[in-house]
Image (cartoon, rainbow, N blue to C red; front, side, top):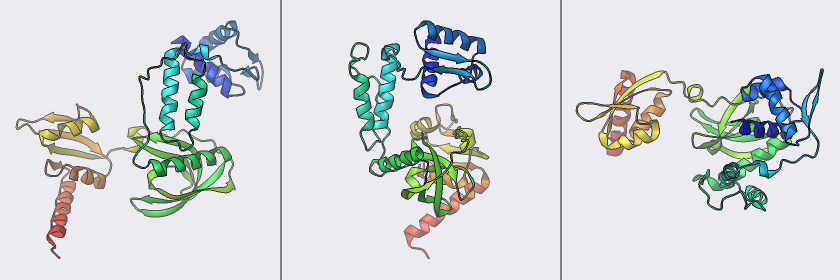
Length: 304
């Protein structure tokens, strides 16, 4: 919608010193002519926008301008407050709660008193998670390196990182930054980090690509899997992969077919179903699963 784009353009101008029409056109996926018309509309609305021509020119907004909250609809404000409320669920400072109070003050005329969206981003690890997020946010703002011990499938290691983003994805929190050990951008899961510290060592910000968090990029597949599940675990398959992830067989069992990324994770996942799942393919994973179950039996039986 046009009004959404106008508010979006205004938000960009309030955050950035100067932008060009082609940059706005690319960001909002419209033509440059449309952007020019949008700028005219913002000018007609009384917003002090300046345009300069030539090299180094672009579109800017007068210093000190503050966006009138009346530009936001009740639904806009509800979405903003829901987002702030979700951040406050993992914040140890209460900053977002204070910000919500500022936004709500004097806004009763267009903000409903009923909350229709409630988001809680906290987890079982809230007590340890909030300090980590706060430390990383401070380090990002101060351009300080962080150090931490990281526990991964291949063991533990000491890492130094230039932090750029705190990311919430797949029900977990991550930090995205330049790893000095790997000499590349990496994503680290906060729950696997220990002894996290903000150092006094500063770094020069790099040109940072946004983290590619698409499922295809992070979980590329490669292991073509076929598993038969008992019908009474249908709810779990639907919850985790959706109702189209299986086909019902003649005997009532559910045939699950999907590309999987890691055999160890696949076996661990199948084990959570107990005796209600049977791996059909691939054969090598089926054999590894049988060996795993046999080793478990020996351990519980006390066999040497």
